[in-house]
Image 1 (cartoon, rainbow, N blue to C red):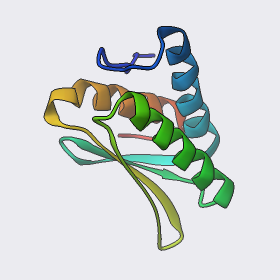
Image 2: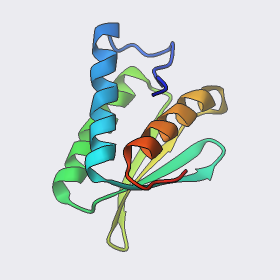
Image 3: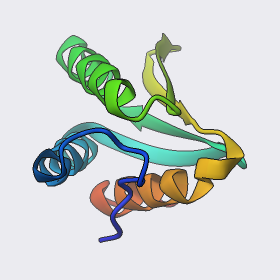
Amino acid sequence: MTSWVPGACTLPTVDQPLRQAEFDDVFAESGRCVERTADTAVRVEFEPAAAVAARLADLAMRECSCCSFFGFTLRMSDGRLLLDVEVPAAHLPVLDALAARATSAIPGARA
């Protein structure tokens, strides 16, 4: 799979594969679909469960601490748990790689 860790990431190199694995795991275990909502934005729908929402909130907060350019919005809407991920245009390759990882991890997902 494509690595999406940007050069600007301040997470120690040894921890980067572990963080990627955390995203891969939550995509595979609870992800439902991936949607490109704009050139610089992706929406991932997850199983609408409190434990999944808590896991995503924790992961998003930790990711923003090392890659501050990410914008994460987690919300419930019409019984759906949605994670919107936005980046500045300069970080589009990172978003593309994240979307590709999510799509490949979620059974039957298409971007």
